[in-house]
Image: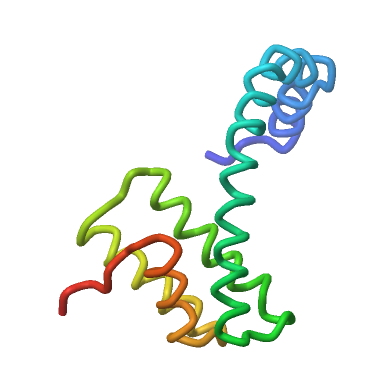
Length: 123
């Protein structure tokens, strides 16, 4: 049986009372600020390393943002403590995705190995 549209609207309105949302965010603010202060320096360091690889390979500045996205995805794997062959397979899946979006395999592999020290997957 379908849910009455007025019930959906009532439930949506109950979830999105701004004073309730503000109270929840206020309670979490200190923890959120702590997370940002610990993570942003790491992300900045990773992005700098990726940019150094891109500079060394002569990659166009117009493509930097896409390579940085790839680097952030690899960084996410590392932060989740994915390692070994699993990391290699996950990184290869990401490589294929970004190659399909027009990036160069050699550059992606350089980022994977030089910045994140993730080996190529075994065939």
